[in-house]
Image (cartoon, rainbow, N blue to C red; front, side, top):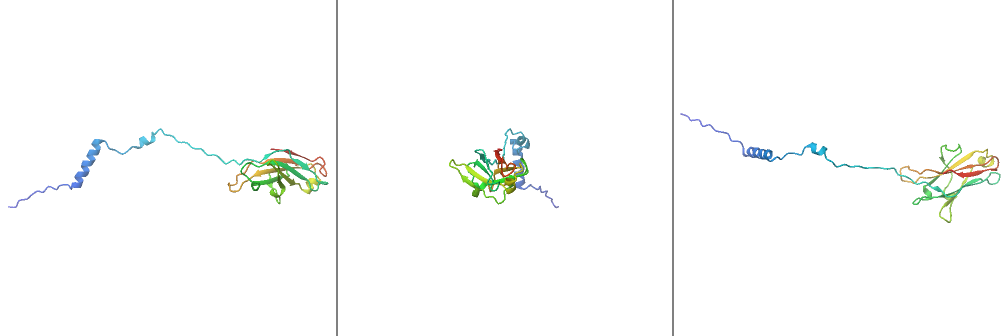
Length: 182
């Protein structure tokens, strides 16, 4: 007679240990943090940003119109101050003959450093020549001249213009004048 021995298969030891640890975790209340706690946190954050502001040159005295001889060599003299930390290389002179408030275009062939003198008090005097037709014939047209601070390396930022307006008068500079706009 053959005797059959029934063997009971025992679980591997690691499986027993794992079940014991899971049971202990449930009993002791060890759980993963829930997302509800993260959403109900009372801390707040804030931030701000601002754009760069390039300071404008300032007009220090009333501008002057010089008619020249019969309108030839006429010029506008502008007195102004440069904001601290900037140089003459950062200044652009722009002009418009299309009336006040029209688009100001850079003055081609004009050198700020070649036409500007430093005054005794540290301010500047810039002489801007007007064209022959504006000086000789006049015709009552206005010329707007603006000094704009446009420093290199700041991504195209520039200041508000410091502007003057001149009128060459009717003929040969008679009755010509200049006035500060800003």
